[in-house]
Image (cartoon, rainbow, N blue to C red; front, side):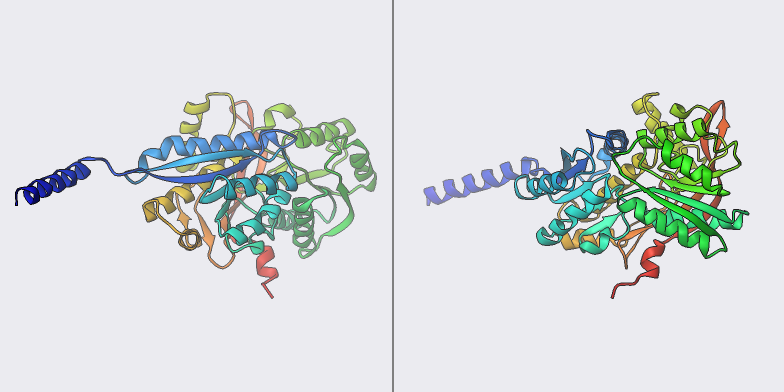
Length: 398
C-alpha cells in the first residue's frame, strides 16, 4: 500500500511538472527561393526586404508557441536547373512545409511540378508567367501576370489616339505574355501592330533595336524588359536616339518604370505611361503605413516597388494561414485557405485569390512618370478595379 501511495505521488508530481513546463514550440519551415546573385539580384533584394519586413512587423501576431523558420536559397537568376535543384533540397533535405518567393518565371515553372509530386504549397511572390498555376494544384500566386497589366496597357494606348504601334519584348516567358497581351488589347480596340522584336536576355545594347523602331515611325512603342539594369539600358538608348523628340510615345509595364530604378534614369522617363499593380507614390492609407514601416527599417537605402509588395503580401497570406490553423496544417488545408484568401489592406489596394485559378485579383493602375517633391514618381491616374487574369478567362482549361 505504501508503495502504491509513493507511486501515485510520483505520478501526480510528474503531471504537475508537465503542466508547469511550456508547450513545445510549433515551428513552420518555409523554403524561400530568391535571387541574390546574377542579373536579377536587385529585384531579389527588393523581394527579400519585403518578406523580412513583414516578418519583423508581424511575428508578434503569430499564435502562442508558433514560430517560423525561413530557409533561404539563391537561384542565381533565371536558371531553371538551379531553381529546381534548390527546391528539391528544401523539400527532401530541409523538410520545409511551404515554398515561397521566386523572381523568374522559368524558375517557377521548373519548380511547380515538384510541388505536385511532393504536395508542397508554393506561394509565388513575383514570377508572372501566366500559365504557372496550371502546372500544379499546389501553386498560388499573390503578385500579378503580364496579361493583367499588358492587356490594359494596349487598350489604353488604342483608346487614346495611338493607331500604329511597335512591340519589343525580352525573349522569355514574361516577354511572350506581354507581347501577346498588349497586341490583343491594342488590336481589339482598332490599333495596328506594325512590327515586333524579341530581344535575347543576354543583350543589353538596345541601340540597334530602338534604331529599327525609330525608322519604322510608329506612333507608340510597347517595350517589356526585366527590371533593373535592363530597364536603365533601354532608357539610355531611348534618350540617345531621340525617340521622344521624334514624336514616339513609349508605353510599357511597371517592370521598365520600376520605382527603385527611376532615380538612375535622370529626367528621361518623364511622361512615360506604364501599367502596374503598385506605385510607391500611391496615397492610399495602407500604402502610407507600409512606407512608414519601410522607411524606418531601411531609411533611404531602398525604394519599395512591386517586388517588395509581392514579398510583403505573400508573407501576409502565409501568416494568415498559420494563424487560421494555429501552425498545424496539411498541404491541402493550406491550399484550401490560400484559394479563398483576401486582404483589403494591401499597400496596392484590395487583393484576393481567385479560387478557380489560384491567381490574384487586384486593381491595375495606369501611371505616368511625373516629378513629385522634386523626385520622379509613377503617379496613378486611372484605376481598373479588381482585374482577374484575362488569359485564363480567354483560355479556360480543356
